[in-house]
Length: 218
Image (tube, rainbow, N blue to C red; front, side, top):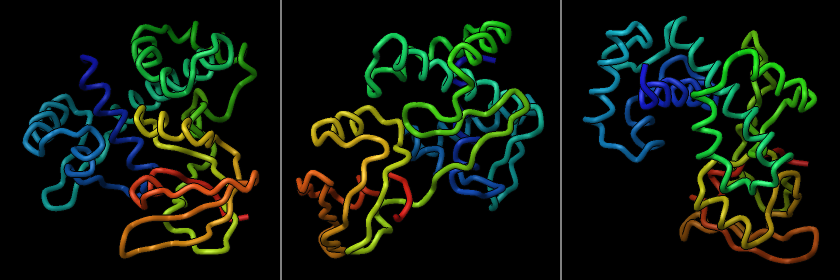
């Protein structure tokens, strides 16, 4: 299996967990990667031939047992490496993805387990994504988006989409995991959200950006 195939498998699993659904639409995968529907459909056909995914016409795509095992192994390795690179080597959260991506494909199970224990068996990576244990069990994925919050509610940021441009944007406003802020205004028509940090600094976000930030109402 090549790297592109493993990335598809991993993404299908992540989308299934994030959306809490059994089947994923091909356009969900296309949106995540920024690929065309045609290229996604071609890859799905290849993965189906390898018995890694099941495709149900007009309904969607799911991973087989074989595909799910691959996905959990890759996600586990990726997120453990992200923790190591940020906590031990000082990588910033926007620059850790590519290196973790390369390392996940080249790590033996023995090295990964030693690294996991060395880090203190972390439950989450630096972006707030849960890390599966060796049996595939993990903490719940936080799925409540900031874009769904209402004025006057207090929101705690617990997970962000691992997208470099988004993370750089959040850095500009010093927004990080476990920050809390009040929703001051929500303008559905113009697609913007105004929030106030605990430092009393106000920030205006688009609802698109807010839809990539997840947490809980305090």
